[in-house]
Image (cartoon, rainbow, N blue to C red; front, side):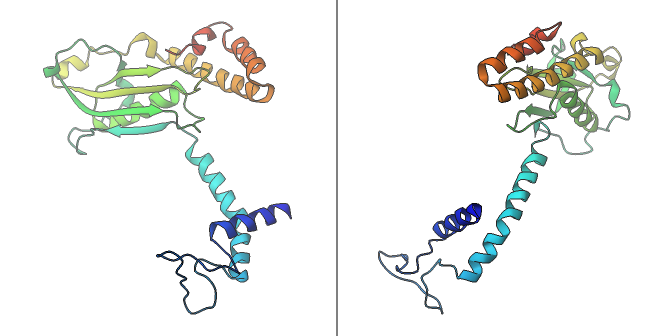
Length: 235
Protein backbone atom coordinates (compact mmCIF):
# COMPACT_ATOMS: atom_id res chain seq x y z
CA UNK A 1 0.00 0.00 0.00
CA UNK A 2 2.82 2.42 0.89
CA UNK A 3 4.54 1.74 -2.45
CA UNK A 4 1.31 2.46 -4.27
CA UNK A 5 0.88 5.78 -2.45
CA UNK A 6 4.45 6.85 -3.14
CA UNK A 7 4.09 5.90 -6.81
CA UNK A 8 0.88 7.86 -7.11
CA UNK A 9 2.45 10.95 -5.55
CA UNK A 10 5.52 10.72 -7.79
CA UNK A 11 3.40 10.36 -10.89
CA UNK A 12 1.15 13.24 -9.96
CA UNK A 13 4.12 15.52 -9.29
CA UNK A 14 5.89 14.45 -12.48
CA UNK A 15 2.86 15.09 -14.64
CA UNK A 16 1.92 18.36 -12.84
CA UNK A 17 -1.53 17.13 -11.85
CA UNK A 18 -3.32 19.86 -9.98
CA UNK A 19 -7.09 19.67 -9.92
CA UNK A 20 -7.78 23.05 -8.40
CA UNK A 21 -5.07 25.17 -10.05
CA UNK A 22 -4.62 26.39 -13.60
CA UNK A 23 -1.69 24.95 -15.52
CA UNK A 24 1.08 27.20 -16.74
CA UNK A 25 1.18 27.50 -20.53
CA UNK A 26 3.80 28.90 -22.81
CA UNK A 27 3.30 32.47 -21.56
CA UNK A 28 3.11 33.51 -17.93
CA UNK A 29 -0.18 32.41 -16.39
CA UNK A 30 -1.89 31.21 -19.55
CA UNK A 31 -4.02 28.11 -19.20
CA UNK A 32 -4.13 25.62 -22.03
CA UNK A 33 -6.93 23.08 -22.29
CA UNK A 34 -7.99 20.80 -25.08
CA UNK A 35 -11.51 19.46 -25.30
CA UNK A 36 -11.86 18.57 -21.62
CA UNK A 37 -12.25 20.77 -18.57
CA UNK A 38 -8.91 19.98 -16.92
CA UNK A 39 -5.49 21.65 -16.90
CA UNK A 40 -2.84 20.68 -19.43
CA UNK A 41 -0.56 17.79 -18.42
CA UNK A 42 -3.21 16.56 -15.98
CA UNK A 43 -4.12 12.89 -15.92
CA UNK A 44 -7.55 11.47 -15.40
CA UNK A 45 -8.07 8.96 -12.61
CA UNK A 46 -8.27 6.12 -15.15
CA UNK A 47 -5.00 7.20 -16.79
CA UNK A 48 -3.35 7.42 -13.38
CA UNK A 49 -4.51 3.92 -12.46
CA UNK A 50 -3.16 2.49 -15.71
CA UNK A 51 0.23 4.12 -15.22
CA UNK A 52 0.44 2.96 -11.60
CA UNK A 53 -0.33 -0.61 -12.63
CA UNK A 54 2.59 -0.54 -15.08
CA UNK A 55 5.23 0.70 -12.61
CA UNK A 56 6.23 -2.75 -11.24
CA UNK A 57 6.64 -4.12 -14.77
CA UNK A 58 8.66 -1.12 -15.90
CA UNK A 59 10.92 -1.37 -12.86
CA UNK A 60 11.46 -5.08 -13.50
CA UNK A 61 12.34 -4.40 -17.15
CA UNK A 62 14.81 -1.69 -16.08
CA UNK A 63 16.48 -3.99 -13.54
CA UNK A 64 16.77 -6.87 -16.01
CA UNK A 65 18.12 -4.57 -18.71
CA UNK A 66 20.71 -3.09 -16.36
CA UNK A 67 21.88 -6.50 -15.18
CA UNK A 68 22.05 -7.83 -18.74
CA UNK A 69 23.93 -4.87 -20.18
CA UNK A 70 26.29 -4.82 -17.22
CA UNK A 71 27.46 -8.42 -17.51
CA UNK A 72 30.59 -7.85 -19.58
CA UNK A 73 33.26 -5.21 -19.94
CA UNK A 74 32.43 -2.09 -21.93
CA UNK A 75 34.03 -2.48 -25.37
CA UNK A 76 34.82 0.44 -27.68
CA UNK A 77 36.06 -0.17 -31.23
CA UNK A 78 37.85 2.50 -33.24
CA UNK A 79 39.56 2.86 -36.61
CA UNK A 80 38.39 -0.44 -38.07
CA UNK A 81 39.19 -0.80 -41.74
CA UNK A 82 36.41 -1.53 -44.17
CA UNK A 83 35.26 -5.10 -43.87
CA UNK A 84 37.11 -7.35 -46.27
CA UNK A 85 40.22 -5.14 -46.48
CA UNK A 86 42.19 -8.15 -45.27
CA UNK A 87 41.06 -11.77 -45.07
CA UNK A 88 39.97 -12.99 -41.63
CA UNK A 89 42.14 -15.67 -40.05
CA UNK A 90 40.85 -19.20 -39.80
CA UNK A 91 43.01 -20.01 -36.74
CA UNK A 92 42.61 -17.21 -34.18
CA UNK A 93 44.84 -18.93 -31.63
CA UNK A 94 47.91 -17.99 -33.68
CA UNK A 95 47.40 -14.26 -33.13
CA UNK A 96 50.14 -13.02 -30.79
CA UNK A 97 49.61 -10.63 -27.86
CA UNK A 98 52.50 -8.26 -27.24
CA UNK A 99 53.36 -5.02 -25.47
CA UNK A 100 56.51 -4.18 -27.41
CA UNK A 101 56.75 -4.32 -31.20
CA UNK A 102 60.36 -3.65 -32.30
CA UNK A 103 59.47 -3.10 -35.94
CA UNK A 104 59.44 -0.09 -38.24
CA UNK A 105 56.07 1.52 -38.89
CA UNK A 106 56.52 0.81 -42.60
CA UNK A 107 56.40 -2.90 -41.82
CA UNK A 108 53.05 -2.71 -40.05
CA UNK A 109 49.47 -1.64 -40.73
CA UNK A 110 47.06 -0.84 -37.91
CA UNK A 111 43.75 -2.40 -38.93
CA UNK A 112 41.79 -1.41 -35.83
CA UNK A 113 41.86 -0.27 -32.23
CA UNK A 114 39.93 -1.50 -29.22
CA UNK A 115 39.41 -0.57 -25.59
CA UNK A 116 37.91 -2.53 -22.69
CA UNK A 117 36.76 -0.58 -19.64
CA UNK A 118 34.62 -1.04 -16.55
CA UNK A 119 31.05 0.05 -17.24
CA UNK A 120 30.34 0.33 -13.52
CA UNK A 121 28.15 -2.78 -13.62
CA UNK A 122 30.65 -5.13 -15.25
CA UNK A 123 30.97 -8.59 -13.75
CA UNK A 124 32.45 -10.85 -16.44
CA UNK A 125 35.53 -8.80 -17.24
CA UNK A 126 38.54 -10.89 -16.28
CA UNK A 127 41.78 -10.82 -18.26
CA UNK A 128 40.79 -14.01 -20.08
CA UNK A 129 37.34 -12.72 -21.04
CA UNK A 130 38.70 -9.38 -22.30
CA UNK A 131 41.64 -10.87 -24.23
CA UNK A 132 39.35 -13.47 -25.79
CA UNK A 133 37.20 -10.60 -27.10
CA UNK A 134 40.31 -8.82 -28.38
CA UNK A 135 41.51 -11.97 -30.12
CA UNK A 136 38.14 -12.59 -31.77
CA UNK A 137 38.01 -9.01 -33.08
CA UNK A 138 41.64 -9.11 -34.27
CA UNK A 139 40.99 -12.39 -36.03
CA UNK A 140 38.03 -10.94 -37.93
CA UNK A 141 40.15 -7.95 -38.99
CA UNK A 142 42.97 -10.14 -40.30
CA UNK A 143 45.47 -8.86 -37.71
CA UNK A 144 48.65 -10.73 -36.81
CA UNK A 145 49.28 -9.13 -33.42
CA UNK A 146 47.26 -7.61 -30.60
CA UNK A 147 49.51 -4.77 -29.50
CA UNK A 148 48.64 -3.83 -25.90
CA UNK A 149 49.23 -0.09 -25.54
CA UNK A 150 47.78 0.34 -22.05
CA UNK A 151 46.43 -1.95 -19.35
CA UNK A 152 45.28 -1.87 -15.76
CA UNK A 153 44.92 -5.02 -13.70
CA UNK A 154 42.04 -5.60 -11.26
CA UNK A 155 42.28 -3.86 -7.88
CA UNK A 156 40.01 -2.68 -5.08
CA UNK A 157 38.77 0.26 -7.20
CA UNK A 158 37.77 -1.97 -10.13
CA UNK A 159 37.68 -5.74 -10.38
CA UNK A 160 37.89 -5.55 -14.18
CA UNK A 161 40.91 -6.02 -16.40
CA UNK A 162 41.04 -2.81 -18.45
CA UNK A 163 43.13 -2.44 -21.58
CA UNK A 164 43.65 -0.62 -24.86
CA UNK A 165 45.17 -2.27 -27.92
CA UNK A 166 45.94 -1.93 -31.60
CA UNK A 167 45.37 -4.67 -34.14
CA UNK A 168 48.51 -4.90 -36.28
CA UNK A 169 49.05 -6.68 -39.59
CA UNK A 170 52.54 -7.09 -41.05
CA UNK A 171 53.19 -6.20 -44.68
CA UNK A 172 56.06 -8.69 -44.71
CA UNK A 173 54.28 -12.01 -44.21
CA UNK A 174 57.52 -13.80 -43.32
CA UNK A 175 57.70 -11.85 -40.05
CA UNK A 176 54.45 -13.42 -38.92
CA UNK A 177 56.03 -16.86 -38.63
CA UNK A 178 58.47 -15.66 -35.96
CA UNK A 179 56.04 -13.63 -33.83
CA UNK A 180 55.08 -15.07 -30.44
CA UNK A 181 53.09 -13.70 -27.52
CA UNK A 182 54.93 -12.15 -24.58
CA UNK A 183 55.34 -14.60 -21.71
CA UNK A 184 52.94 -12.63 -19.52
CA UNK A 185 50.18 -13.41 -22.03
CA UNK A 186 50.65 -17.16 -21.99
CA UNK A 187 47.56 -19.23 -21.23
CA UNK A 188 48.88 -19.99 -17.75
CA UNK A 189 49.52 -16.35 -16.88
CA UNK A 190 46.15 -15.24 -18.22
CA UNK A 191 44.43 -17.96 -16.18
CA UNK A 192 46.21 -16.79 -13.03
CA UNK A 193 45.19 -13.21 -13.70
CA UNK A 194 41.57 -14.30 -14.10
CA UNK A 195 41.71 -16.15 -10.78
CA UNK A 196 42.81 -12.92 -9.11
CA UNK A 197 39.77 -11.19 -10.62
CA UNK A 198 37.49 -13.80 -9.05
CA UNK A 199 39.37 -13.35 -5.80
CA UNK A 200 38.68 -9.63 -5.84
CA UNK A 201 35.00 -10.19 -6.64
CA UNK A 202 34.73 -12.26 -3.46
CA UNK A 203 36.65 -9.66 -1.49
CA UNK A 204 34.43 -6.83 -2.72
CA UNK A 205 31.40 -8.85 -1.65
CA UNK A 206 32.86 -9.24 1.85
CA UNK A 207 33.64 -5.53 1.98
CA UNK A 208 30.06 -4.69 1.05
CA UNK A 209 28.63 -6.92 3.80
CA UNK A 210 31.05 -6.12 6.60
CA UNK A 211 31.94 -2.53 5.83
CA UNK A 212 34.88 -0.75 4.25
CA UNK A 213 37.66 -1.22 6.84
CA UNK A 214 36.93 -4.80 7.85
CA UNK A 215 36.00 -5.74 4.29
CA UNK A 216 39.25 -4.25 3.05
CA UNK A 217 41.23 -6.41 5.48
CA UNK A 218 39.38 -9.49 4.30
CA UNK A 219 40.00 -8.50 0.68
CA UNK A 220 43.71 -8.09 1.36
CA UNK A 221 43.85 -11.40 3.22
CA UNK A 222 42.16 -13.28 0.40
CA UNK A 223 44.03 -11.75 -2.53
CA UNK A 224 47.52 -11.40 -1.12
CA UNK A 225 47.96 -15.09 -0.38
CA UNK A 226 50.42 -16.69 -2.79
CA UNK A 227 50.67 -14.69 -5.97
CA UNK A 228 47.63 -12.53 -5.16
CA UNK A 229 49.64 -9.52 -3.95
CA UNK A 230 49.85 -8.02 -7.41
CA UNK A 231 46.08 -8.04 -7.76
CA UNK A 232 45.61 -5.21 -5.27
CA UNK A 233 48.08 -2.96 -7.05
CA UNK A 234 46.95 -0.39 -9.58
CA UNK A 235 49.32 -1.08 -12.42
